[in-house]
Length: 178
Image 1 (cartoon, one colour):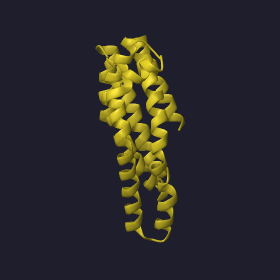
Image 2: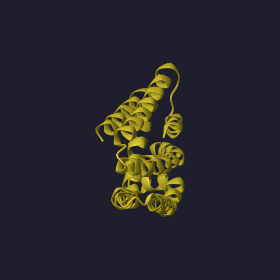
Image 3: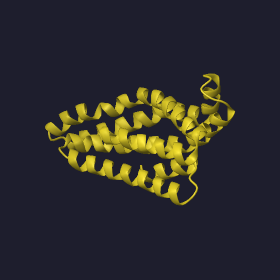
Image 4: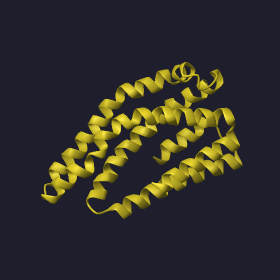
């Protein structure tokens, strides 16, 4: 959504201005690398509106819950190899692709070890949000997602202006608000 892209842009600008160019480069490179891998996994979650709409239309809410559980489990099980890869090989991949030097790759590796957990928490919450969207609660989920992103970027900005912000601290705050 538009707000998600805007908040990601604000976060990148805050990291770039207050933390440094090596860290914003690491943030962008990891986001690109994980984003490519994550697109392969999102198929099971993106099926939720389709299959759950059929179950909810038939008033079979148990089946809709089972579809939700199955989609999340498929995402998590399929994500274990990606999680392992990102946890251990982000630095090596960035160096192999010649996206940066050793300093940037180290920042990306330390950020990846925290942010992969944020991605999995967000995937689970996305599954529930898609189910609520299917059951005509789209306004609630949109407001909740907007509020969480706004608070996350706001807290990161507040810490960046009042203390020393690091890329790892930004990742922990993102995990807290995911």
